[in-house]
Amino acid sequence: MVNVLFVCLGNICRSPSAEGVFRALVEREGLSEAITCDSAGTGSWHIGKPPDARATEAAAGRGYDLSGFRARQASPRDFDDFDLVIAMDRSNHANLAAMAPAGREDRLRMMMSFAPDLAIDEVPDPYYGGGDGFERVLDMLEAASGGLLDHIRAERLTS
Image (cartoon, rainbow, N blue to C red; front, side, top):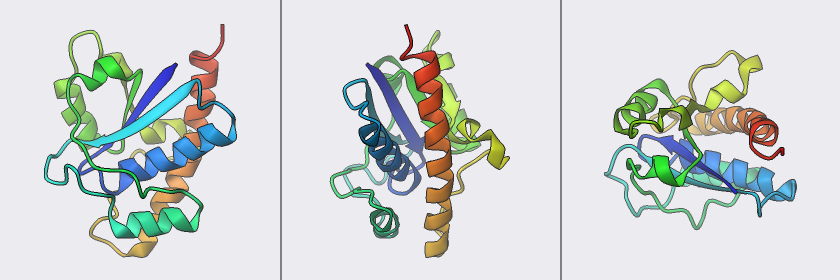
């Protein structure tokens, strides 16, 4: 079993969207028994809240269901529970690196590292922008999710 955690700041826009996109891809590929995923935020102010309505609407428009998701805060224990901890941007990457227990730092990655052809380092936070920002984020997450699945297949699901 490979466990993947997606992390952004508040766990109401980017990381639940990444979880929804990746979960749907894993299900389509018939790998739900081999790969699980979750999402979290480095901040605490949205704990227990559902994803942003704009994120939920944009995701639903592409067939992704975020309705059951609830925000939670990332913790050092996540580095024990998850094989990959994937940050949406450099700031959250730095926050996660600071909480990673010794010997677990290698589990931390950047989401867009799985979509090198896009030449984008970070998934931008669409929270303070318009609805088109959520669509752009989904474009990025779809591209990176395919690369992430390829990485998992190559590195973790082969014998």
